[in-house]
Length: 126
Image (cartoon, rainbow, N blue to C red; front, side, top):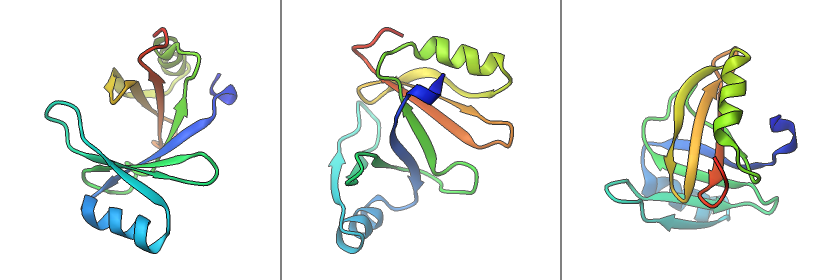
């Protein structure tokens, strides 16, 4: 099911957004842009890579098991069905389908507890 989806980005929780921005921009050499969060949500960073996979950095508590998280891009939509199928096959629902910047996201844990995220834009059918 997710085998036909590209990984659109990799999500990281970071303790200090300014420090992360400086490191990935000045030391790593990526183009980094700061995005204002939606109503009441914090700003976040997008760092573009040459391979087309963006790195996303959100303020939070980085700890083993919650970061990094591969994010599958559901370009055709259907996030509700994808989550239902994964949970039906034994994945653990971590975050139900909920609003994310510009669309919808959900997270499940694989059998070893690693997070897998799915994202689809708002213009696609859920």
